[in-house]
Amino acid sequence: MAYQPKKRKMTAEINVVPYIDVMFVLLIIFMATAPFITQGVDVDLPATTTAKTAAELAGDNNERAPIIVEVSQDGHLGLSVDNQDMVRGLGLNELLTRVRAELQLNPSSAVLVGGDARAPYSFIIETLDALNQAGVDSVGLMTEPLEQ
Image: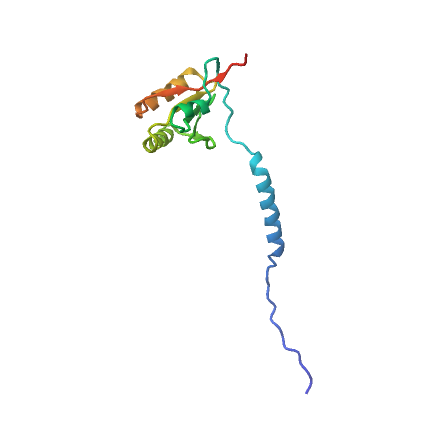
């Protein structure tokens, strides 16, 4: 009797090890470049000689960081609570909801509006009016101190 090798069935399998290596490299690249990506627009505040810093204002207000509402040159809104990163691209209703919620949690928090120096006055007034209608009693306007 002669030896007859068994017929083996061919199976197609994908070797995923190279794909995992590529994904790991891409993950590292995205993690390294993420801190350099900025969204939003820098606001150029008008300057004044009697401006208080946010730290001075927080010191006057039971050590609570102020709620900062930002109005960009194009009228886009941003919000920062407790010195956290500015959340930009909010709609007016979403901004008002977040401000109301924060004021319910911390009624002693100051609300500051910072408008870009190149923003039309109407954007600032609309924001101030909306905050007033939302029940915010006192709103401060942010400025940059003049260098003397």
